[in-house]
Length: 337
Ligand code: ASP
Image (cartoon, rainbow, N blue to C red):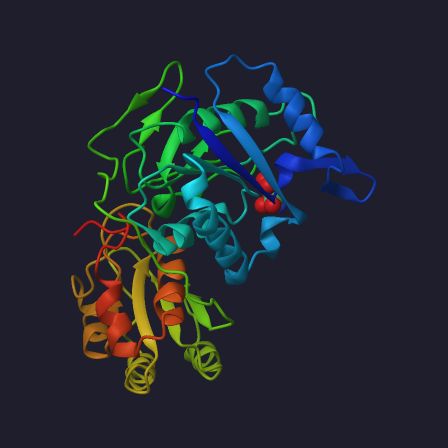
């Protein structure tokens, strides 16, 4: 069998940065440090071609347009490579991974995102391990999805979240099993992986500045704060509720407000602030009024996936009603039916 060929897309993040007097900044000769690292690896490593973005970004600057750029870059090169590795900052990697999973549905090759907590140029960096393993995983025959690899864990991209600011175990998928562990040796969870689709179904709409806003409930959140947010005319609002999907119902003004927003075409979805389990609005009386107000639950989807999915469906030009319906359909393994 011929050696596999992987596209290595460097979009930004700590991995390719160097400490400067002004803080971390992109390493000017990242290509050569990468080549140096990979030339010493054994021949089991696939061949790779680096596509480095001209202006790599700190991923906290990413917008849905950056997701779109990466999605399109993968789609246009899809037939030229056996797999893809995306080097990306950790801060918003889970959002990009989720968005890619919606753009690149029915993938029949691996798309592995990785990065590092410590730059490749610094001592004791986690970058060499993450990058080498990500390249190996991108050459695998059993991965047919967008995944995040970090420090021994392979996670479904649209189920992952950044859980640590400094630990090398930067990511977890608290509501879905890991797809594989690589330490001490590679072991896939075949039940957890997506099966290979018959056909790719790529959707690459123009992502724009559509307002999808998060609203996190905190004890005593004034209704006027919710009103002020709805006055911005968002297309969708993610209500980050308590537990099973509860919000305060002592002041009827809140539900009235939500009901009016729903009627005017705002898509309202309710997720939980708890990372594990499944939202079921109406379990408690305090959440029951939400259904009447048109709010829909998010099942066991994670926040990043919810945010990216709403952007994706809205970018496809759907009406609010169509978004509400499509949103509850599993598109890429982000939702347990
Ligand atoms: N701020 C960086 C980023 O997300 C952090 C990192 O890469 O770990 O781009």
